[in-house]
Length: 97
Image (cartoon, rainbow, N blue to C red; front, side):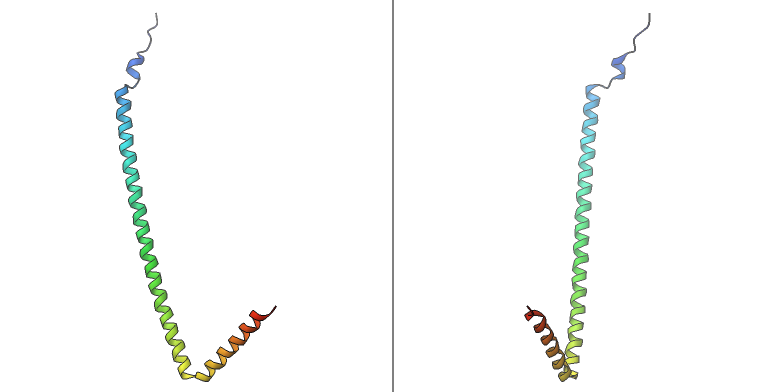
């Protein structure tokens, strides 16, 4: 007569399954915490980079304004002629129907 294999010994017990599920929950919780911390760190880094870019843009704009101001002070009539030409061009383009 052929002996049947002992299926009770090979099947995981309910306690083993519960322990595995608890471990899975703990691992998933750690994963969520890690992802949350990583996302927060990434957002903080992006905010820092954006602030630095804004600061650089402000410095560049101030330098350009100073250069323009100096150019206008050195050659006021040229600046008036350029402004009049740009104004005439814009007026022509905007009033064209």
